Image (cartoon, rainbow, N blue to C red; front, side, top):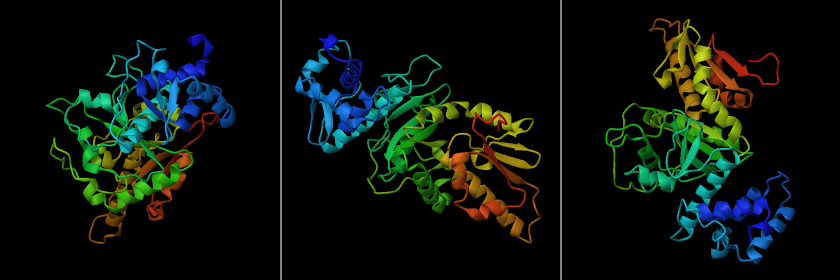
Length: 364
């Protein structure tokens, strides 16, 4: 029976056997193994699967696998389950979409941590079984495990979502004295084409309430659900690192995230690595540096806050003028983020370094 189906059709059925649901548009993207973007042609590859009762398309745009499709993969166990109403179905489709994105970029999706240095992704439902006490209102899609980090992944669409700061914070609490399952950062994945707008929105909201959000106090661990409230995405020091990417940029940005520790060490040189993120990544020759090799939105908030604090000291006639200055390394596509607060660019002695594309023989 499998011989009658094309490889891309089997790929879609295998995905649905593991993740239960996927939106119709995401199904077409998963079928597009050649990268043609021809939705009409892809719909012709999709149609036989519904006609022959391998899958079913529902009114809400979701696609689920039927018994005939599941029979093609008898040894494949579902990683997540479906149930509940429309909101639960949308949630499952979000997780399924993120899983498809991971595997399309060479990141395997598994049900538990595996002993490997290669990145792998654990869906949120599986992570909840591993780590008890995560609040029910958290919106993370799963945990991206790298060599040293556990990065909570979020599908934020156009950036407008109900952000539950205290619920998401439950991922960052040590559990029963162990830090091995504590999240160390976040990866926000937004739609292609809106990255800069989303980055600006998140940074501005966070800067507006930074005194509360960036304080050092750790929240107490809670086991019961917190109240539901409508709020934009705002960052907290608790989150550690908050990277922003899009589906089209995911592979490149993941490489940058994994290379970041080495890049910080290179820029630090013979300086001193700092252990307090709001102060920068390193200190060398009266300069503190922020290395934004990967788009860490929280690091931009730290940079703006640190520069403004220094400028207040320099403007205060009653305070001895400090010799401390700041420098920042950024990617070319993020230059507009520095323009969010142009007053910070007026700091005397500020150094801004922009990474050049790899094809540039001059390097960076």
